[in-house]
Every structure is written in C-alpha cells, then in structure tokens.
Length: 169
Image 1 (cartoon, rainbow, N blue to C red):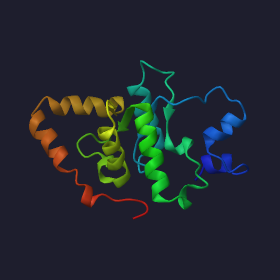
Image 2 (image 1 turned 180 degrees about the vertical axis):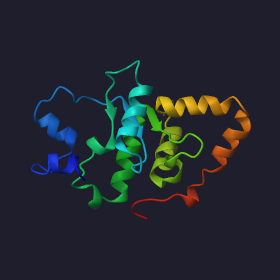
Image 3 (image 1 turned 60 degrees about the horizontal axis):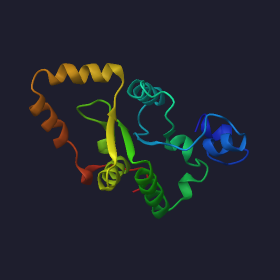
C-alpha cells in the first residue's frame, strides 16, 4: 500500500510489468515461487530469502507483491488466483516458503499459504524448501538439539486448515 501501489499507480501495472515496460535488467523469467505470509514484516521476508538463497544470489524469484498487479488484486475472482498460483508453482517446480517462527509458523495459519504448500505437494517433482533468517535458523538448530521429534510433532500438530484465516473468506 505504501510503496508498490504508489510507484505503479500511473500505469496500474504490477511492479514487474512496469519494470519490463522500462526494459529494466532486474526482471526476467522466474525460477522459484515464494510463499510467505503478508503478516510478516517485509524486511524479515527479504532477510530470510537473502540468507536462504545466499549461494544463488542471481536466482529470479516470483514474489506476489511485485509479480501480481496490486491495483487489480482485490477484484480478481478465486478461480484466477487459484489457477495463476497453481500454474506458477507447477511451471517453476520449486517453492520456497518463509517460515517464522519455526515452531509456530504464520504461513500455516493462513489458508492461501496452506493452498500453496498443497499445490507444491501436488505438482509432480516440485521441490519445496523452507527459508528462515539466520537468527531463526540458529534458534531452530538450538531447539532441535533437545528433543527434535517432540518439537517437530508439536509444530506440525498446530497446522489445521480448518482454523486457517484468509483475507477474503
């Protein structure tokens, strides 16, 4: 609302479409689908992705905030959203989900993120990875040194699609 929409208001395009129109070098064919919760602080998501992708800094990501037209987003029907995201996930064959905190991740409380995880699992041969910031990864490793099975079971037990929330019920 504060940055992307004002920057793209004149043309009412997605940020990526606007950059493409300007022949910007930073836009290309995406190689990985990014799944995240909008409730996260943007810089925390960036931090987790930079840390996770540090060995492949030039990989092109599909990040909904920039890839989707934020001016049209609220008016699009469920079929558009589900088809577009499912197709993107299948096409890339690679999804990275930002998880924070690891033991009670916000994406597994959001219906759309659960849907994205489902699409990844349903896509034949699709790779799924979890991105955490260095700080959260260190916490995860520290926690796993005590009772990993109990802790992982407790985290997984919190995932319940029926209790998930969504922006547009």
